[in-house]
Amino acid sequence: MIEKTRGIVLNQVKYSDSGIVVQFYTRDFGRQAFMIRGLRNKKRGRQNIFFQPLFIHELNIYYKESRGIQSIKEFSAAYSPSGIYSDIRKSCVALFLGEVLTAILREESAHTELFDFIEEAIVYFDKSNGGYSNFHVAFLAGLCSWLGFEPGTKTEESQKYFDMLNGIFVSTPPSHGNYATREVSEILALFFSASYEKSNEIPLTGALRNEVLEIILKYYSLHLPGIKKIKSLEVLKEVFS
Image (cartoon, rainbow, N blue to C red; front, side, top):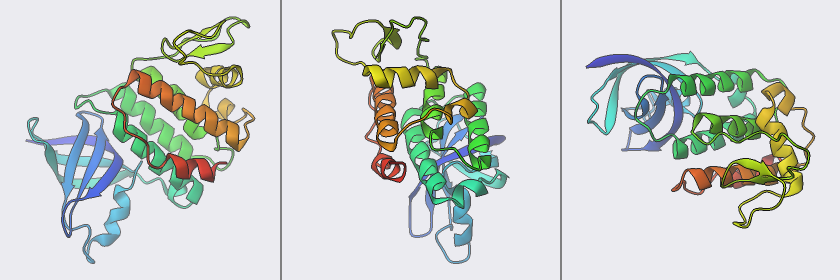
């Protein structure tokens, strides 16, 4: 059956001498894999750029629910993030977020609100002219609310520690040991309640930003067991150190 949907590219892997398999997060069918033939030959090789992480496409697909890899009949770029791929630092963020989203978006069913959240974030990031060093942290801080483990807000000054296991701010370090330091907890409280614009105003050194990012990824791993190590993390940390 031919279906129409919109899809966000998460990643791609080589499949054959001339083909690739692209993981998309689609608005109507959740995460889906698609076979794209011929993109690694000289004639169509230039089109490979359209299947880099965070590109957004309108898709006409041959969809069958029981099929592990779907086929694309036609595609057209709904949004090309040229601002991301003309900036080496932004492109590193795109690769990182594509890898994270590949690891955590597992459902093969529609979640239109989540799709819209990711799409709007991509457009915002692409159009950001400066002050985006905190974007990837802010994005992950906001994304967890759509995945079923929204963190509680800090309501009292005495709540100095973020309890990652229970997703709340507490006054004393919990006995299970999965909590953030006082400094990181204070920063997390800001990110959990800030817009992208406000999050860019949070003053962070490179080392502290990386520490906050590590804690957020640990928070994800506690609530989404089975997440693989994010290979692009070290490169991203180096870029924003």
